[in-house]
Image (cartoon, rainbow, N blue to C red; front, side):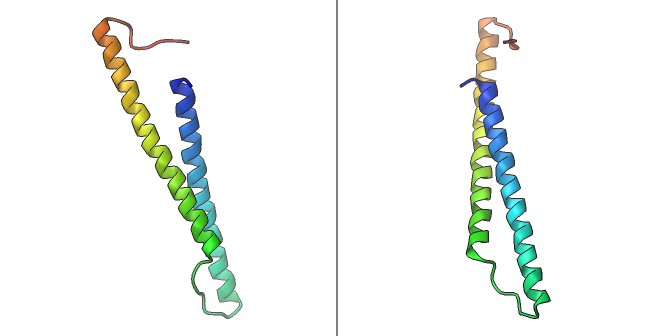
Length: 92
C-alpha cells in the first residue's frame, strides 16, 4: 500500500472513531434526559453505550498512533532521499 493510501485509511479510521465517540456520547445524554423526564433518578450509562464509546476511543487512538508512525516513516524516507541527492517531492 502506498503512503498516501495508508494516510487516507488511517485518517478515515480516526474520523470514524471520533464520530463513534460523539455519537455514543450524545446517546448517553439522551438516555440520561429520558430517565429524568420519566421522573426516575438517572443511573449508570448502559454498558453497550460505554462499550461503543471505548471502541471509538480505541479506534481513534490506534489510528493516531499509526499516523504518527507513518509521519516518522515519511520523514526518514525524505531524509534518505536528500542524502542521496534525489528530489524530496515526487509526483505519481
